[in-house]
Image (cartoon, rainbow, N blue to C red; front, side, top):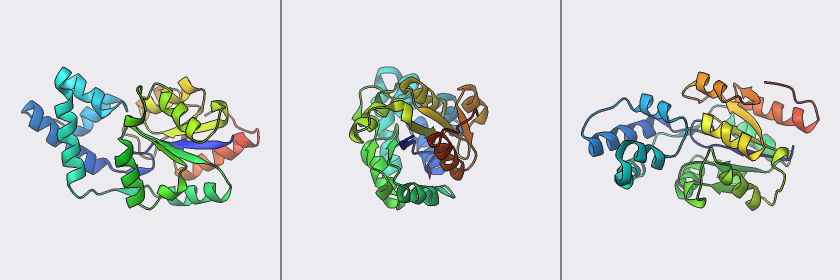
Length: 220
């Protein structure tokens, strides 16, 4: 194994309270009724905000995404790295393991939040929704990250994420799939995506990565 790719929301950063406030706001503003934002997002299974907007509003989806992002980025956000993330990233950096972020968030928004929380320095690349034509579970964002990192063998890369879309993207790219259960909204759905490994704590990612690097990787 040579590198690790990470999803952002609910994997590296706990952004859920701020995201759910903005989702509830966008839904009520655009559709005129209230919703349970957590249940709505859980049903979306890790796909993009644009796809959720299309599902709810059809061709008028850009109004939904604009209202969401204006609310989300226009207000103070309660975001933080999950416990243990910073330590794991520092150990990877010390061991010379290159890392990148692959997220369905806009690249500028992801970069801002990684900088705000003090972990941007650990990553060689940040690939966001606006960087590719296709999105997770399509493998294109993963391939874009590998290209930026000058890596050409997906089989030697681990992808860590909290949603079915992350796991399917890893499968489609040929990466090692590691399901991050510490931030997932629905562990059952995540398991149903058949990840090769489950990680209950960020430190588990490090153990799994080096086990595979040393030829000792086993089943989930």
